[in-house]
Amino acid sequence: MNRKNQKQIIKKMTAEQKIRAALDLYYSARALKAAGLRAMHPGISKEEIDKKVREIFLYAGN
Image 1 (cartoon, rainbow, N blue to C red):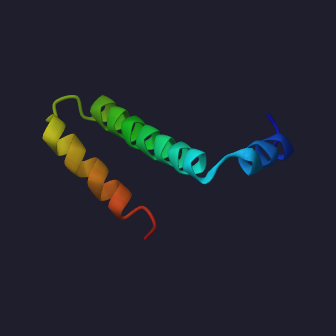
Image 2: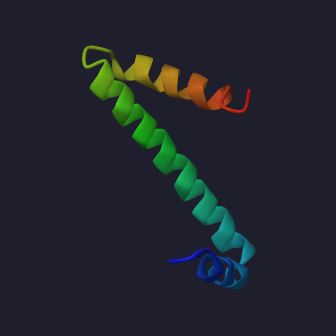
């Protein structure tokens, strides 16, 4: 899919659909980051992974 097609699809989406798509992307990115951290640090606890993911996303724009 090229950018022109993406723009056309996004223009046709309702506000609710756009928010839902953004949230899906956000949570997918968090899950992917958690999976990467687990692969890099297999002995780390789920709580520590969750904490690291929160920190990474909290400070992502800085």
